Amino acid sequence: MKKGYAATRTRDIAEEAGLNLALLNYYFRSKEKLFEIIMTEKMEKLLGGLSSIVKDDATTLEKKLELLATYYIDMLTQNPDLPIFVLSEIRNNSDHLVEKFQFANLIQHSSFFKQLQVNRPDVNPMHFIISLLGSTIFPFVARPLFQAAGNLNQKNFDILMEERKKLIPKWIRAMLQTK
Amino acid sequence: MKKGYAATRTRDIAEEAGLNLALLNYYFRSKEKLFEIIMTEKMEKLLGGLSSIVKDDATTLEKKLELLATYYIDMLTQNPDLPIFVLSEIRNNSDHLVEKFQFANLIQHSSFFKQLQVNRPDVNPMHFIISLLGSTIFPFVARPLFQAAGNLNQKNFDILMEERKKLIPKWIRAMLQTK
DNA sequence: GTCTATAACCTGATAGAC
DNA sequence: GTCTATCAGGTTATAGAC
Image (cartoon, rainbow over all chains, first blue to last red; front, side, top):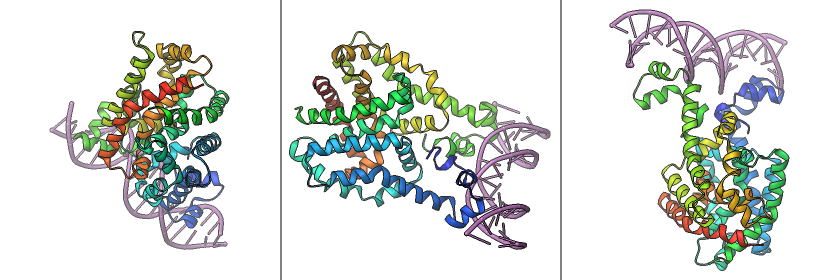
């Protein structure tokens, strides 16, 4: 999570886990196989919540916006390294894992996607999804830059993110009403 | 750019550049030193345009929003790997390079920052900057996921980004007016 | 400046004793 | 299951001839 696949030594993993290098290989067979387990787990952590919120037919569009912003900001405040890890590893060696997640199906048949389409039939729903996730996830991806830009220590950064839980749903609603 | 520092072999760099491994070391002394040159260059490419647009006292807030969206979408369409490279390397080994860029000074004394502050004295201007850059840069960082989610081939993705040049400034204006 | 050859070290993986 | 020792191959960097 901290250094990515290529920069991480199996020796270091074994040491931090309090076991032997040989034993690590005994359990996981290879660095590559261990990585796939971790990577699948982390992709599920990053995208599982999204999945369950967007496909819920019982919630309104407005409620989904609230849930998504709150869920991601809470989860990423606890796991700030998660998105940059997943996204950079997808670039490096895990294009095949993206397919496994059946994203097109998940998103395009979701209640959320349809609600966006009904609300704004003139705009591709992906635009709103991108802006929502960009506003929510990107600050964690570019955290060192934003902390430097805003002179924010860790605590002030977290406070700013907390404020965004209310701002983001309000802003997406404003976007949906903007012709 | 394609694989990041740790996964890249100096042998491959030499070969792709059409010269010898020994000669590469003769010119750049070490992999680390070569990396710092590339990394500084890429950070400038990612952030130099932002810098010159935000500090221009002669343009209105609205004009800056247009310029920023257009500049980034054009530049990232030509260099889609740039942001994920820079952001993941900052995490890995280049925290010290962030300081060198004097971000706090650049942003907080910029014309853009002040215009945002005048427009909305009740909201930290960083919120708008984060949402603007998140909406603009994040789709390129998470491109494989969004392409999968939206069933978008390369061309359709580029078209979607092109549409965002007009949508994003309009949306940020809407956000600024939302109480 | 440019190359070949090689040093010196690192890394993933396994053999084999317990 | 667990460990020590080690192999086999890869990687950065340099020595030294031209």
